[in-house]
Length: 130
Image 1 (cartoon, rainbow, N blue to C red):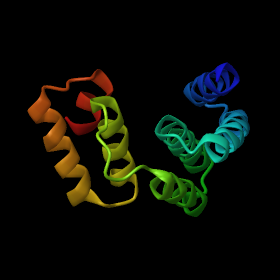
Image 2: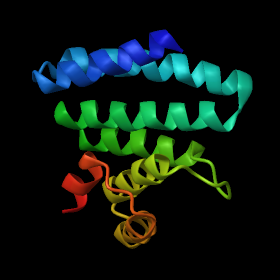
Image 3: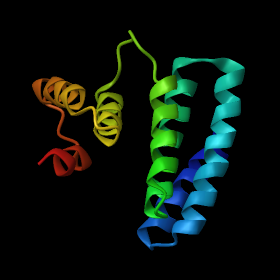
Image 4: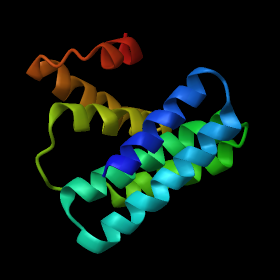
């Protein structure tokens, strides 16, 4: 929903200005809202939204120096990520980044190749993968 989107944007902006404590607090609020939404609907969209919220939360936790906490957030994202469904290129890119964060480089590389084969060239994706 709109509140979750606003919290996500606020967390990313706080990270950009290095306000890591604020970023983590906003990301936690967003993840909690989206977790409740996912538990209510269990829809594909809600699961991906919650997974993306956990990815952002992991980034904020990592920036605060807690690598183990970041990994837990990323593992939660991986645990709810839908399997066996067709994903949009942007979602595949998000999953590739998540797999990379979890150290699953072979799977991340497979996703990257799948994206390149489709012609996907989002600037953040190109920057991440060179």
